[in-house]
Image 1 (cartoon, rainbow, N blue to C red):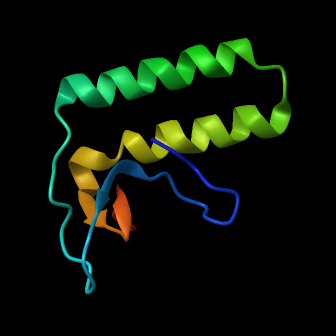
Image 2 (tube, rainbow, N blue to C red):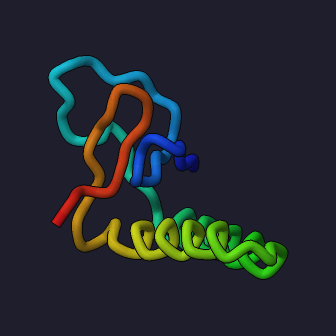
Length: 83
């Protein structure tokens, strides 16, 4: 799981995907989603920065939408589909 400064979205996994991008070649189990959310909450509690906390909450909100929106492949990894 990563979030780059030039990309306002969370990238999950590191699998290289071919162009044109299609559906994500993997899925995340409910247990994996819960683990990501737990990790985000732990980091959020440990940080005192306002910008960092905002970014972490955005990541959490994205990940909580995976079941509803699905994942799309990117060049490296996958992202939560946009509404």
